[in-house]
Image (cartoon, rainbow, N blue to C red; front, top):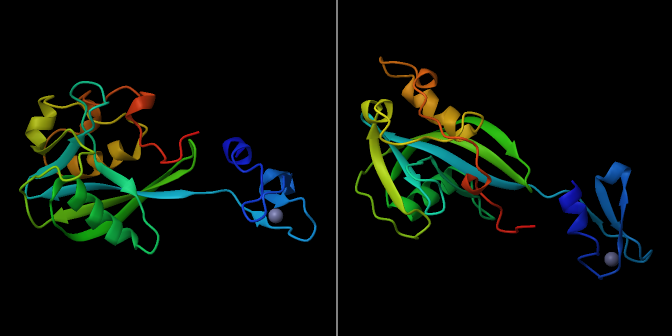
Length: 197
Ligand SMILES: [Zn+2]
């Protein structure tokens, strides 16, 4: 809320100063003839565990700590359904085609304004091509490879971890939580809003 107020100090319509009202949940233009009201912004982003057969698709960004992999994620575009965003993001980042996808859970990440919307999705193709350069690497991983510590997955409090855990624990082997393959929480590892503050 503080970040939003600091970045909306002026009316977007006429440029006059805004004032905070209703406990800070509204920023209203102080020019009486205008009176434009603005409300806190939320940036919806999809995050998705993609799987096919006994493997799941994880990727890593170049800025992340060594060996850390996570689920595919990205911001929803205007005019796009959440399911379309899942298919587009996975295609853009890895070239993998998505079939059925199902909503699982969400997590607010208000630093500054993201709402992560978590999906489980089945892939219809496997060949990886890093189309848009957002990921440094993407891999198909079996539960055995994850259990063997070939990669470090996202921190435990993240929705990415919960999505990976839901898929992993559907297998017949050990539970993910007992394996110690989750990484520490590092600010650089999180999805950032395009409007950094
Ligand atoms: Zn105004």
